[in-house]
Image 1: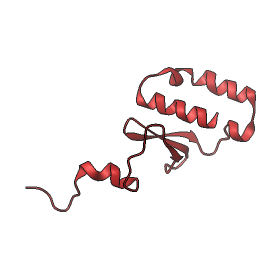
Image 2: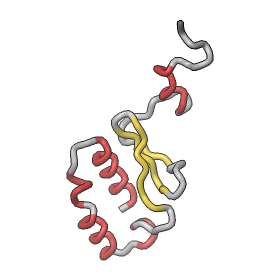
Image 3: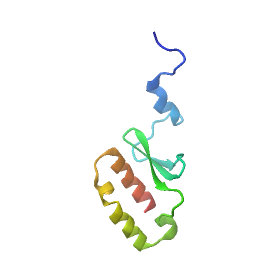
Image 4: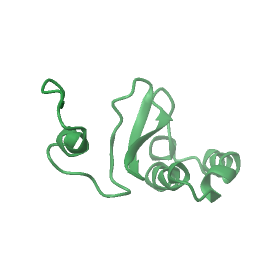
Amino acid sequence: MKNKLLPDTNILPKMADGGKTPKDGATKKSDNKGKKIAVYMGGKWHHFGDSSMQDYRQHKSEKRKDAFYSRHAKNLKGSDSRSKAFRVYARKTW
């Protein structure tokens, strides 16, 4: 017997974003406390960036930019959906 109180779970992802499923690589301001940006990749939202820290868009420091890329080299080379989402985040903020 189907539970009438619970909605059909197949339609939840479409309903959650105004009736449209976003494309991979779509970005928005993160709704997670302490995170800056959310990137949609592989069927879910990935949240990145410490909201209390500046990124390259604010500080314009090449030294800090280089440190970011060397610190996250492994994350930038991965082939999983989180790594792909991280590359979108890095291009957008660094």
